[in-house]
Every structure is written in C-alpha cells, then in structure tokens.
Image (cartoon, rainbow, N blue to C red; front, side, top):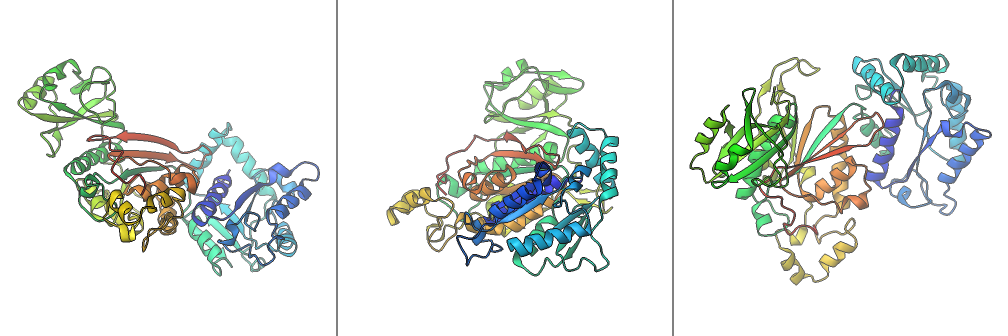
Length: 520
C-alpha cells in the first residue's frame, strides 16, 4: 500500500530498457503455499544460474544482458501480515540477515534492501487513491498497514545493519538514506533512478519539431530552421500549450477555412452563453489535419491569413463573420472542456539544443506565476524552456545532411543494413540507437521526478525511444514507432497499477508522415 509494487515494476523496466540487463520480480505472496520458501529459492537459483559461464560476472550490466547469465532479481514483499510468515519477507532484522547470508553465500548474489516510508499529505492522498483503485476503503487500507507495522521492524540506524547495503526512501523522492550502494556503477545508477521515482500523476506531452527546411528537402540530420509550415505548427503549439498543457481544457482542434468556406460557417456555429460553439461534429468541413471539432467545442482564437499571430475571437457570430470578411484563408481554434484559467496551470518545457526544436517552442508564452502554486512557495516561471543536448537527433555521421538517395549512391547497402538491425546499426562516424539510449537514461530518470505537465519537443529517433519507455514497450519495438510531425501525443500514468493512457492531438497544418526520414 506504499507503492512498492509500482517501484518494483519501474525498477525492472529501467534495468531492462536502459541497461539491457535481465530483471525479474519475485512476489513473496505467490510463494506462500506448501514448500513456498523452497520454491522461491529454486526460482531464484534458476534465475541466477551462471553455471554455463563460469567466468561471467552476474553484476555486470553488459553480461547480464546475455540469456542465462545472472541478472537482477527483485523480491517483492507485500504489506500484509500473511507475507510475514515467509522467511523471504525481510520484515525484521533477523529475516534480512538470513536473506543476505542465503543469497550471498549460496547464490553469490549481491543484496540490497529497499525500504519505503510515507508520512506526507500527498503520500496519504496516494494511499487513499490506491485503496479505491483496489476496491478498499481508506479505513481498511490503514488497518492493513497498521497490522503490518505491528510485525515490521524498520532497518536500524544504530549501526547494527551497516554491513548490509540498503536504500531508505522517505516520501518517495523527498529524502533518501543510502548505505553501501555507491561503491559500484550498478548501485549508483539504481540510486539515481530511485531518487527521482514517485507514484503520483504524470502528464507528458511529446511533440516532434515542426517541419524543417531539411524535411522539405528530405535530408536527414543537420541543424536547419523551420519551414513556413513548421512555423505555423509552432504557432498552433503555443495555443495548445495555453489551453491544454497549462490549462484545464481536454481537447484543441485547429480548422483552416478558405474564402469559399467562410460564408458557410454560419451553419456550423451558434452563440451560447456569450461564447461561439460548434453546433455539431465537423467531419468534412474545412481542413482540421485529422482532428475533429466536436459539438459544443468553444471557438476561442482565430488566425486571419497565413503565418500570422492568433487573436481572440469576437463573442457573436455576426462580429466574427464581419471580421473574417475578405480573408483568403483563416484558421479557427476550437477548445473542448473547461477554458477558464488558460495558462494558469504550472507547466514545464524541454527541447533539444537544435534550432528546429527551439523554434517550435518560440511562440509559447512564459508568464511568471504567483508564489504559492508550488511547494517551495517561490514564483514559477511558466514553461521556461530547458535545452538538452541529450535529446538531439541521432547523429548520422558521414551521411549527416544527405538525402536517402544520396546515401544510397555513396553506400548502396547502408539503408538495407540499417533496416536489418535498426537498433544496433551505427552510421559511419555517427551514432546508433544504443547511443541514444545511453544519453537518454539521465533525462528520462529526471523526467520521473517531474510532477507538473511537461511538453517535450524533440526528434524522431529520440521520441521513438521516449514514447517506447513511457508506453512500456521493448527497445526493439520502440525503434519501429512512427512519429508524425505536427501532432502532439499525451501520455498519462501513475503508480496505482493501471497502464499508461495515450491521447493524440493532430494540430496541423497537414498531417506529415513522410519526410524522407522513416529509415532514420
């Protein structure tokens, strides 16, 4: 009930995705039957079986990726009195010492105990939500924890357990006590990841940069700026940020109308409570780049002409039509849900260090929100961009800035070689997906710490891996993900036990899927 299952699952995914090592969770409650303790030991022995490779080091990340060689076993004990009947429950000092001797002497495994304690108001709120998710009342969950605490002996800080490596997480990532874990690469990496992890709500928005000049020419890599269409996407992204990322709205659709469409607009909108709203779903009116205007979505902003600033719409249909009269092209912004307080929800912004991602964020507003909204009591700089070189596009080395046709002329087999092993292929003097995974590890660990909505603007290869990590995909499946331009993907997840939830927002202009970089 303290989020141990969530932390165990995330730690397993982290080890597998970012380090390519074997990891498995062994739940004590699944071995509570007859001979359960022996069966758990046999399962651990089988997992750690390195007899086929006597020189293998089971604590080496590289070797742990080899099937049948070592790995990371996560023994999970639930907060139930029933689990304390097992020798593997680690609920007392004696049990922890027994486990350490058993695992170290007989399985040659290195042992670390992870203890979680929670007493913050936010932690109590999570406890309430978790109880509801599991079909329990808050009182029932508290009684369960109280019964377990009567049997549990915390890790002692009187030096009596100093010989055993342990990590004590207090209120998840607020405070951490570490003992004998920083002496190895494995230990330090695990500590860094856990120091960021929490089970509260995450809302992550992923967006590929707007169309760039190199996209138009179908060239890979480089550091070109945005095309005119890419700049238009940047303007629409700013509107999306204001109402959805940093607001309470749940949807936003941009619809482009021609001069012929404008007179017909009267049939599709109506005035309602001093707002202009859609009278029905717009399936085939105007160009929404794949988005759909739903009935009663509010018309909040408009753009007269191409690549001009968006402005507020009038409150009456008559004034709106008068404003649009004579325009060759207009773009209307319809917003679904609560449009009050737009821009008032604290949000964060990350981009790569390359021009095309920075320019995609150029129209996003950065007001200073008043003190008191954040836990530190300080003013908050809304959507203040942070640039990460770790999030730059995969470097194509000798082929950077070339088209696929030019690459094929230089090296006829290179495209086929990359398709055969997309994950491991390395461009001459360039990078592979393994290199991106290595430089993304610290960024994604840091992302786990964030509790505000965050918009990440990056590149196709990088976003494939980010999306894969957030959506619980394997590394192999992640690199096959399609990342269209001019679309925002929202991924929501928490530590209650459900999977991540994905929502896509095509913003346009046009839904770009083929820019010559599908094989990148």
